[in-house]
Length: 138
Image (cartoon, rainbow, N blue to C red; front, side, top):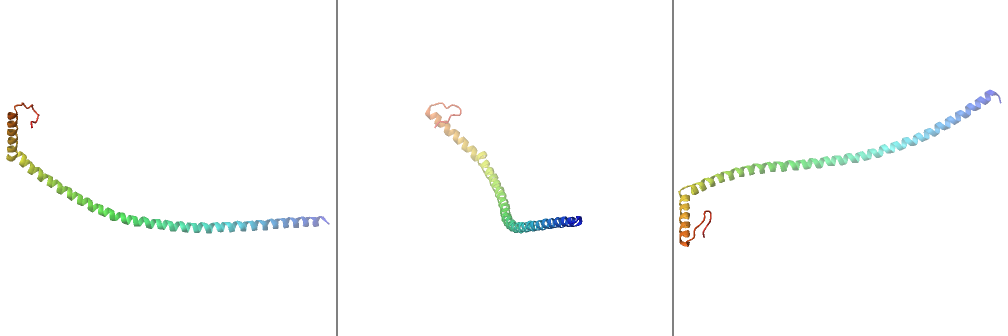
C-alpha cells in the first residue's frame, strides 16, 4: 500500500468515526427534543388548569364583592336609622329634662320639699332624739 492509500484509509476511517459520532449525537438530540416537547405539553396542561382555577377564584371574589356591596348598603341604611333614632332620643331627653325641671324646680317641687322637711321635723320631735346633720331618722 502506498502512502496515498494509507492516507485515504485514514481519511475514510476518520470520516466513518465522525459520521457515527454525528448519527449518535443526532439520535441523542432527537431524544432530548422529544423530552422537551413532552415537558412543554405537560407544562401547558398544568398552566391551563392553573388559569381555570384562577378564573374560578376571580369569579368567587366578584360574587363576594357583590354581596359585600349589598351589606355595605344595608349598613348605610342602618347608620342613617340609628342617627335618626339618636336624634329622637335626644329630643325626648330634652323634653324629659324640661318637664322634670319644671316639676322639681317649680312650685310643685318646692311644696314637696317643704312637706318632706315638715314631716321629718315632726318625726324627730315625736321620737325625742336629736338627728345629726346628714342622718335620716325613720
